[in-house]
Amino acid sequence: MSVKGAIVVDVERCKGCGVCVANCPTKTLDLSKNVNGKGYHYAYMANPDNCTGCSSCGTVCPDSVITVYRVKI
Image (cartoon, rainbow, N blue to C red; front, side, top):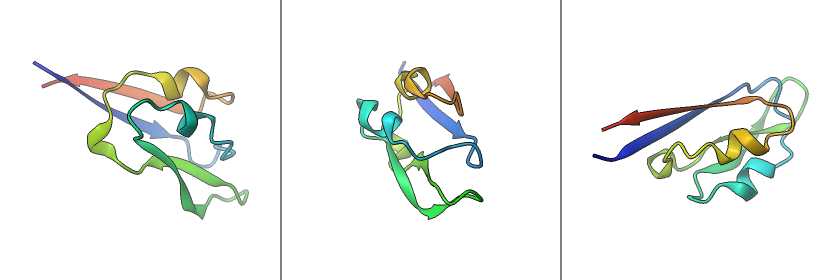
Protein backbone atom coordinates (compact mmCIF):
# COMPACT_ATOMS: atom_id res chain seq x y z
CA MET A 1 0.00 0.00 0.00
CA SER A 2 1.31 3.45 -0.88
CA VAL A 3 0.21 6.97 -0.12
CA LYS A 4 -0.88 9.52 -2.70
CA GLY A 5 -0.97 13.17 -1.76
CA ALA A 6 -2.57 16.30 -3.09
CA ILE A 7 -2.61 19.93 -2.06
CA VAL A 8 -5.05 22.77 -2.43
CA VAL A 9 -3.63 26.29 -2.48
CA ASP A 10 -5.79 29.28 -1.63
CA VAL A 11 -4.68 31.02 -4.81
CA GLU A 12 -5.97 34.47 -3.89
CA ARG A 13 -4.15 34.47 -0.53
CA CYS A 14 -0.85 33.02 -1.84
CA LYS A 15 1.92 35.64 -2.04
CA GLY A 16 4.22 33.53 -4.22
CA CYS A 17 7.10 33.60 -1.74
CA GLY A 18 8.32 30.20 -2.97
CA VAL A 19 9.13 28.78 0.47
CA CYS A 20 6.90 25.76 -0.24
CA VAL A 21 8.60 25.17 -3.60
CA ALA A 22 12.05 25.20 -1.99
CA ASN A 23 10.95 22.83 0.79
CA CYS A 24 9.13 20.25 -1.35
CA PRO A 25 11.26 17.06 -1.20
CA THR A 26 9.55 15.53 -4.25
CA LYS A 27 9.72 18.61 -6.52
CA THR A 28 5.93 18.64 -6.83
CA LEU A 29 5.42 22.40 -6.51
CA ASP A 30 6.30 25.40 -8.63
CA LEU A 31 5.11 28.96 -8.99
CA SER A 32 2.51 29.51 -11.69
CA LYS A 33 3.24 31.70 -14.69
CA ASN A 34 -0.25 33.11 -14.09
CA VAL A 35 -0.95 35.62 -11.34
CA ASN A 36 -3.73 35.97 -8.78
CA GLY A 37 -5.87 39.06 -8.19
CA LYS A 38 -3.05 40.73 -6.25
CA GLY A 39 -0.49 40.13 -8.99
CA TYR A 40 1.42 37.30 -7.28
CA HIS A 41 2.62 34.14 -9.01
CA TYR A 42 0.92 31.52 -6.81
CA ALA A 43 2.08 28.00 -5.93
CA TYR A 44 0.58 25.02 -7.72
CA MET A 45 1.18 21.30 -8.25
CA ALA A 46 3.44 21.28 -11.32
CA ASN A 47 4.14 17.54 -10.90
CA PRO A 48 1.06 16.17 -9.08
CA ASP A 49 2.09 12.52 -9.51
CA ASN A 50 5.13 13.18 -7.28
CA CYS A 51 3.12 14.30 -4.24
CA THR A 52 3.24 11.98 -1.22
CA GLY A 53 1.27 14.24 1.11
CA CYS A 54 4.27 14.79 3.38
CA SER A 55 2.91 18.20 4.50
CA SER A 56 6.28 19.99 4.22
CA CYS A 57 4.72 22.70 2.07
CA GLY A 58 1.83 23.31 4.44
CA THR A 59 4.13 23.40 7.46
CA VAL A 60 6.50 26.03 6.04
CA CYS A 61 3.87 28.26 4.40
CA PRO A 62 4.03 31.58 6.28
CA ASP A 63 0.43 32.43 5.39
CA SER A 64 -1.13 28.97 5.94
CA VAL A 65 -2.73 28.92 2.48
CA ILE A 66 -1.91 25.26 1.70
CA THR A 67 -4.14 22.35 2.67
CA VAL A 68 -2.61 18.87 2.30
CA TYR A 69 -4.56 15.69 1.64
CA ARG A 70 -3.34 12.08 1.83
CA VAL A 71 -5.03 8.99 0.45
CA LYS A 72 -3.91 5.38 0.89
CA ILE A 73 -3.95 3.54 -2.41
